[in-house]
Amino acid sequence: MPYTPPPELASLSIAEIAEMAEAQKLPPVDQWDPKESGDSEMRIAADGSWYHQGDPIQRPAMVRAFSTILRRETDGSYALVTPYQKLSIEVEDAPFVAVELESQGSGKDRTLAFRLNTDHLVVAGADHPLRFGADKPQPYLQVRRALEAVLARPVYYELVELALEENADPLGIWSSGVFFPMATDK
Figure 1 (cartoon, rainbow, N blue to C red):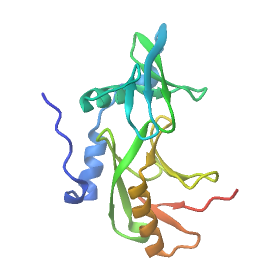
Figure 2 (spheres, rainbow, N blue to C red):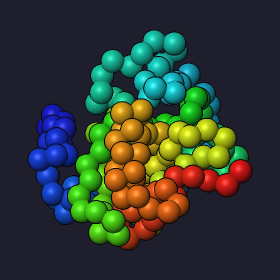
Figure 3 (tube, rainbow, N blue to C red):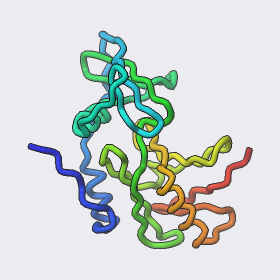
């Protein structure tokens, strides 16, 4: 059955987006401890592009498939994991990029939903917090199992605009009942 990307977020309610995000079934890579290991000769660039042996992976379906078996190791490295094999993969920044944002509600009642470059959907909240680094203003969204998505610049600007409209002190944004301050102490 061919992959059909989800519809534009703006055409969906947050409840529909949350339902779609919850329905995304992923393999239990954290439970697998394969004996065979090696190097995948793959790299995820800072812009979210995937490469194999230096060449870009052109098929989005392949990127989506690989992204479902990606895991972050306790030492901070990344690996593609199956029950039989674990292959290292280089990740320049974050393995995912949040490329689209949908916001519904305002203040404490706001909910933020993000589409990733892999077409996965994530609703920000307690299980998927937003993080704003002290060393650089680039925000990140926890996707799953210690994997993060960097927010694409237009998505970040949209998020800042929403936060400025809220006029919270400190500057920040709510999603799913959780407040995420944008300014961090150094």
